Length: 196
Image (cartoon, rainbow, N blue to C red):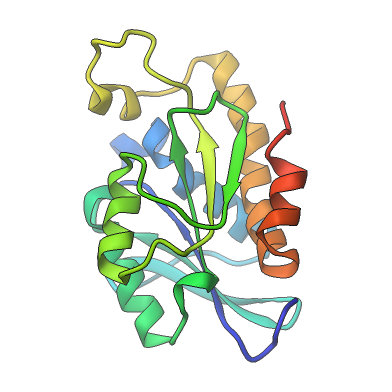
């Protein structure tokens, strides 16, 4: 499946700034940091309105990106890097938080709408396509339907949920690499049903 002449981009979504580090909305950042660690690199180059690094995976050129635009404008950073290195949407994998899944769960998708996620909405708008693979990282839904969604996603995890998240954050990066190698259907079969 891997073609050594084709570069890939894995994007982790989140908000820059220490106050957001451990929030539900920053699961994409945390997952991609763990992935970088496992690949022996650091995401520390500042360009394309983001922090990025270039590495290789099984001989294939791979870029890891953390947009620094704040969540709602993530697509600007994704577009700049992908356009510069000529990476089509089909080879852009996005890791992000999903409130419709419980903590510890992942859902792998080949494409789709934004589903109310502003970061994904921005990427679709800027890149001009919904056809990019994504790894949704469950963070749990609001306990109170009347609560503000922004307050919920910018809040932190309970100790029990934090433990479940450690499992899924590690798996999210592994799932992204498997998408590169084996495609979305096989990756979805392996990861969509996993529970901590």
